[in-house]
Length: 283
Image (tube, rainbow, N blue to C red; front, side):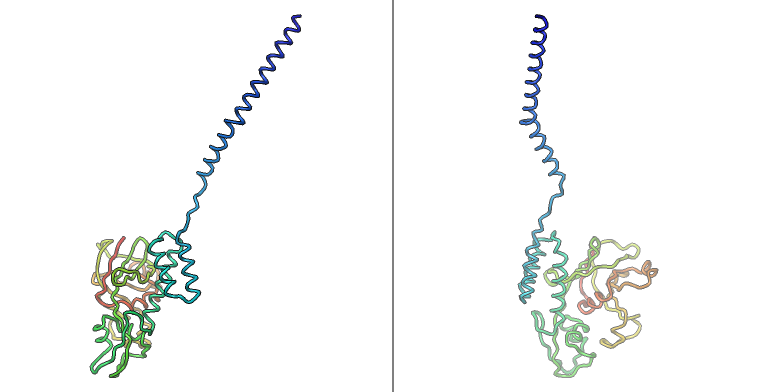
């Protein structure tokens, strides 16, 4: 009899154990495990790198479409919109590059775009006098009118345009930006390097004083082959910080101060920058 009782108790204990196990399994499967899976999924999602939405991409693609159909003005407007509202877009640098190239192409073309007008050469005129009177540069007038030299004849028709730019140099981004009147973006140029003379502050305002061609000791006729081949620099009122082309000799670069640009970029700036142009240097 005792044996049967023991077997009965053992059976009951086993049944209770099975019921308890089934209950634990039920609670695990229906409550604990799903909740843990949700928590693990949340942790996994949080660890994933958030995908950044480029809101300027559509605007850039719209500009490209307009350019492809010949709607240059509409394409430029779209790029300006991108530059104004989406400066964090990956297409922002390309938009600035394209707008800058178009701005320069328009300004250096012979077509009468806004701001340009025809000037009829009068007796006693010289290119320097016309450039000063029209707030332009001799180099610009020669380039736009495709002249071979500085000689003029009474009655000659010249395309002229005022060149009222401001230069903003950003040391942090190592860029030189031309701004038109009103502070509007015109074109950006990369700075290859810069070096200040001793005791020069890292932020200052100055202005362009003069254009130096070659050594500056001899006068080279504007438009001549010697003038074109000569090294040029734009000197500022503040000493020791001219706009220079990059020097080929790396050793010389260590000791010469100024703002260094690619030679082609500097040659372009020489056409567009006149004495008196304001220069703002910022960190």
